[in-house]
Length: 169
Image 1 (spheres, helix red, strand yellow):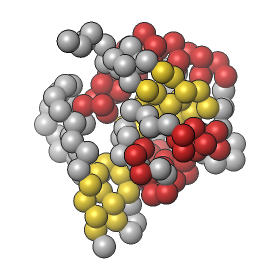
Image 2 (cartoon, rainbow, N blue to C red; image 1 turned 60 degrees about the horizontal axis):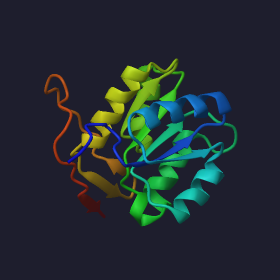
Image 3 (cartoon, rainbow, N blue to C red; image 1 turned 60 degrees about the vertical axis):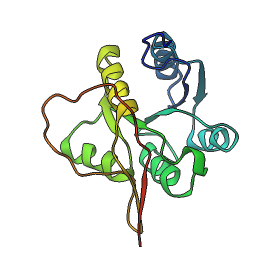
Image 4 (cartoon, rainbow, N blue to C red; image 1 turned 90 degrees about the vertical axis):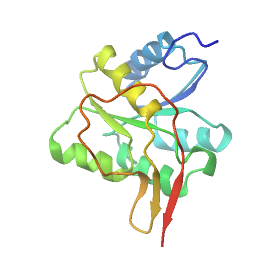
């Protein structure tokens, strides 16, 4: 029997260079039932952590010094440890212009949430990302969830998540 928590017994990796945001995100995912939260202040720390652990969800800041969230997600989808390549990624950003939303999508993020972070909005996006049944695409020019969108009205939350991979040569 499940507890009904969105992240019941899930392992979540958080990536943000701001310690206050990491603390706030940790609190939100803990309340949602995450069993283990891995906090990383840089993409390098996140890469090292993913080499050692399999995770169920990643929340990544888009704008960071050095390797930003976009570069990190591209690395994850193309070169990251195989067991973590298809994991849902929620990109967190202060910029939600359409061009930034497309940039996150094209990097391979599952969804995006804007700052300032509203916990209810974040949890809705996490629930949708965790329930996503989008096929994972792996081609020469893109790796990540299928980018095609259909307007089906409100996105249903729940159901089984498929992690099928399509390779396009």
